[in-house]
Length: 514
RNA sequence: GUCCCCAUAGCUCAACGGAUAGAGCGCAGCCCUGCGAAGGCUGAAAUGAUGGUUCGAUUCCCUCUGGGGACACCA
Image (cartoon, rainbow, N blue to C red; front, side, top):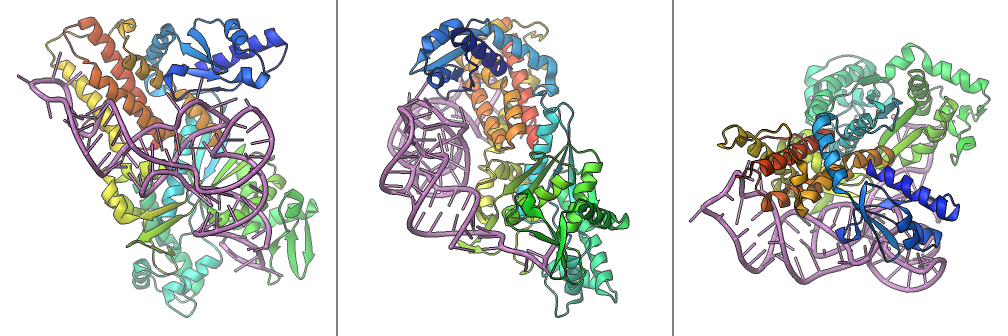
């Protein structure tokens, strides 16, 4: 990765010149007149940028320029050609970076209670988690996708009541009516449990499949109780003297770990709270060897962060081993008005409906393109209307165009073999720009594995597609000039590979025809 | 009341404290008798409001306005 090399070069130069260990930051300027990479190190150190510029020599770079205090680097063509060959060689493996060193990471997402269908909000977190796991695996982590099924406790009882249709019913919707016909029983617990199983198997799992997500583990809450893991964890907390009794309840001293108040583990009525089972669950994850935990939660779980981080610390995790990604909630707009989505009122848009209406690729791209902090107001009618204009097609179109050209080669009158193309023939700005765009996929993956900002991927896919479309407009691939044709063919093949890898990370299909 | 998040072009969204704030859709135009026009090119169009820190602020801090969320012996 050229970025790393440049940082190293700059650091060495700064050290030699000023005997200082500089914190070097490097960026890719938006405007290409400022080079391919650029650093502000001279301004930070308050030194003459020309000194630094002239101290840096490398065959990676064609030239170094100084403008407005920045030191700007222009990548050498030799390097571009070398990297292009690398892409063609590595194919679907191109983009891998060594960052995780095989570290086991657990990515837990969706984990919606089995009390109803998955809705838009679950879709948002679901796509994010799925893609994040893809990215982490590309960055040499060993990421597993996990869905925690809360199939015990209060909400299952409420589901039971709902299926009974008695006074304490809370959930509404067509699926409850279906369950009423299907499930008969005499105890609320029994009916609730059976209904939850039906919902999990016949609604949630099919939805998840439809979303293109494949969980490694479906972890059932009841399993914790079978092994009495909750009691064991409570004993452990007692041994560590992190609990106390007050007002008839048992409290966890989460304030010792940064929470703003202590939290109840066992209520005065003897029932355990969710924190108790969640702590047992954390212990369980620790025992399974996960070195890092990532949770993706809706913004409504914000208040739960500190106590879980505290509990994780007690269960063996260090600060920084637990990352919680808060997705802002999706609000629903219908007929220009916001309506409250709730499984309790029966008003919601399911993820199935969305995928049926706009297609999986458009749905994924739509959600992935937004940062987790963005507050999303979702209008299904608007989404339907816009789905044909979804930028995902811009990217897929680039892919289909490439495939179309490649397939033309076989019935071409020109004898174009792609064995040893002379890539140095690629000289036009649009060609070089395209190569520069191709070779940053590893950077994209590295950055995203570090900061979890998955919206970087659709952004990159669009940039890459744009570079290709501009290349296509200006350069004919198949022509009388056999040598040039070979070189360009290699270039579009590399583009195809990188596009496919990028779309693959997003879980979006790469159609050869559309 | 306390805490978290958000406010960028007509609309939906981007932008590690950096250079001329980027895209898509929409709008006004131009480009197919050569590999797919679901494309390319040109143009109009934006940082909610006051201060502050900084060589430099959409980004960090204060205040204000307007939204969303959280503050349980709920999940």
